[in-house]
Image 1: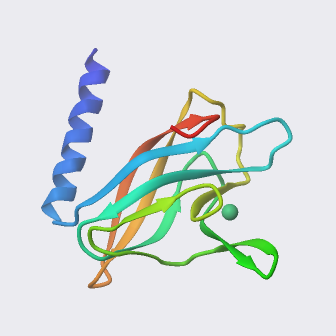
Image 2 (image 1 turned 30 degrees about the horizontal axis):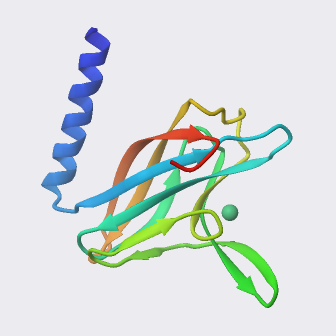
Length: 146
Ligand SMILES: [Cu+2]
């Protein structure tokens, strides 16, 4: 019970710190894809809405040794995936990270991601003045989209 209380207080103070910086950003429906046997990588999907212009410049999680923000693009007839160094998040406009599009790629995972578990994701945003801001959130691991 004591531990539960401590984590609630911690979450509340993290929110307060974020609010104090006046950099509101909303992350909704975040989920990580559960891995099947033999799979080497996975991905996190979510919807991000920034209230002022931001860029998503980094993502990290202890669940993967390599975490990169990727986009999928058609090049001719071939769907290609590449790292996106700074995803623009226009003010008030929801940006979807979804299968077949933008995603946070998880590679070199120390252990398999199992449905029903959670991973901790840290997103780094850059504001219009070039200042970095970190946001941590728990991400449920699922076999299907929420
Ligand atoms: Cu990818």
